[in-house]
Every structure is written in structure tokens, then in C-alpha cells.
Image: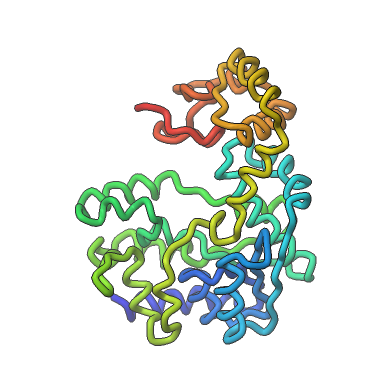
Length: 310
């Protein structure tokens, strides 16, 4: 199965050898970097000592013709957050933080003259890479059911960001040959043991261990953590003082919205300026019990980032 996986991935990636690459230095993008030998790889970081910055530099040194470290500051993020909120019609802090990372990377490719960029989107969903899935490693039948559900609703902000910025985003792991192989693959191929620990994306790790070495065993980090963008939560919260928060939390409650913290309130202010209260939207399905937005998926609200009770 490893041989088949490598053959299909190599064939898909061969179409994008002239593309730029978003490179975090994690497993998925490092495999793509090895296969593509991109003309330009890009890593985004909030500061100069993020984990992604370090790992991406090491991978790019071996496989990229050129490598750009897109280091942004908080003021840069403040300027683009309204665009993220408007584009995705959301005030979900996790979505905003992660999409901001991608926005800067994709924009950097455009500024460097590239009309297309490759991302590692889809590998975590298809091969059980997310950290929260580890709780199901002891029950692989349950894990498979979780993945089946995830595949029905997974979506990727990079594609829409590319449309907004006028640059094509290519996602090799999501192309039909890889998608079909991954979704038909036995769950036992995706979870395995290495050094007394169970790992997701096991078949990908083993398939490229000889080529990439220890990088395949890099611990999974959420995009916002690896890039350092998780730090903006407190920074945005600092833009709302205690008195404002106490007062406005009561006001937004009249909108049938519950804000979880100051960062959440900051984003909701912007959301409301664009779209008004979520409860005013026409809805033909159930509404989120935390923000009254219409739910497109019963277990998660893409508008506010809550997990409504089922």
C-alpha cells in the first residue's frame, strides 16, 4: 500500500512542479516539498522563533530553490482580520487565526509573481492526523466512523483565500486519485506504533521515512500554534477593556449571541458591522444555541466556533 500511495502522490504532484508551496515544515508539506522541489517555498510566522519557522527552514534548505520567511506583526494581522471575517462570514476565533496564517502565505506567493500555490490541505483529514483524533486510537472502528463524518463536511479556507487574492490554490492530497485511495484504505494503515507511541498518518510517515528522516516523526502542531498565531488571542483581547467587555456582553446577549471572551467580542463587532445579527438571517434548518446562526453542520457552528449540543 505504501508503494501505491507514493506512486499516486508523485503523479499528482508532478503537475505542480512550477508552483510555489506553503511549507510549515510538518509532515504533509515536507513530503510535497521533497516531491516538488519548488521554485519558492513560503512559511508564515508571527515572530522569529516559531516552530514552523525552524522546521520549514531545514526542509527548504534541502529541497527548495528559494525560501521566504513571511514574518508578520500584530498590526499586520489587525489590518487583514476584517477581510477574513467578511470573506468567511465568521467570528470563530480558530477559523480567523488559521485563515490569517494562510492569507499571508498565499499573498506572499502572489507578491513574488506566482499564479498558483500548493498546500498540504486534506492529509490530516484523510489520514487521521489531527491531535483530537488520538482519543479514538484505542477504538479504530469508532475512529473510522469519525473520519467518515469528517470527510462529508471538511472544507479548506486556502481555496477561497486564493480566489479572493487571484491566485490558484492546488491541493494534491484532495485530488481524486489520492482521495479515493485514502478513503478506501483500511484504518489500520493510518494508525500505527513508533517508539511506544501511537501515531496518526502512519502510512505517510513510514512511506517517506527513508527520504525525510526524523521530520516524519515531528509531533503534529495546530496551524495557529506552529506559526505562533495562537498568541494573537490575548493581543486582540487586550484591545477590549474590562468595562467594555462587561457592558457589551450584555448588549450582544440581546442579539442572541454568547461571546466567550474579549477576542471573541472583538471579532463579533466586525462581523455585525458587515452582516448584522446572525438571528436575522433566513434559516431553513436548526440554529446554533450560542449565536443563533443557521447551522450547516449540527455538531459545529462555523459562524461562532461553538459546539452546539446535539
